[in-house]
Length: 231
Image 1 (cartoon, rainbow, N blue to C red):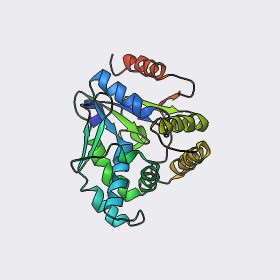
Image 2 (cartoon, rainbow, N blue to C red):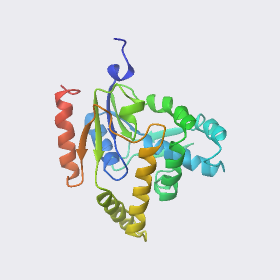
Image 3 (cartoon, rainbow, N blue to C red):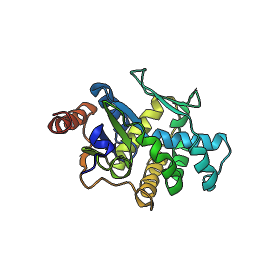
């Protein structure tokens, strides 16, 4: 069998909808394992932000594709508390986390040519000694041959509460029902899109994080990794 990138470089994929804790878990795992980190959701959010900055409509596929091939993206993991996301030399970590950007990113992510333009950019993050890839199609499309794939899930109500608490902690005035509606709407759009729909890979290990602490999720993931990738 021909060697694939994932068989040469150790790649661990973490997929799932928003609010399941996969971003936090990916950062923890990457740090503990000494691996590189790919936040694919940030890449789509960066594309969304860039499209706003350049006044490109989500319906203008040609301009979006051209823009995506020229994006200057860097992840700075030197800050242990939070990965810093850099676009064109500017730290936009906070700017890409608002709901307007999230909604546009979801729209952009449903466009086939845009996903194709960003596919190789994501695969380029797979470097020695390994990679933890966080997203929605890491195990199904970007790294289909990854030796271990995880799919994190949680009830919509639980994810909405987590997001509500996070935004309130940041001093924002938000409504729980509005957040829940946005999450449910995005789940539907992501799972029903024709290109790379949100779903577990056939060989993914599914973990429901609804009633689990971050440490409990981490220990469950590490137990599987110790039997395979880290063995």
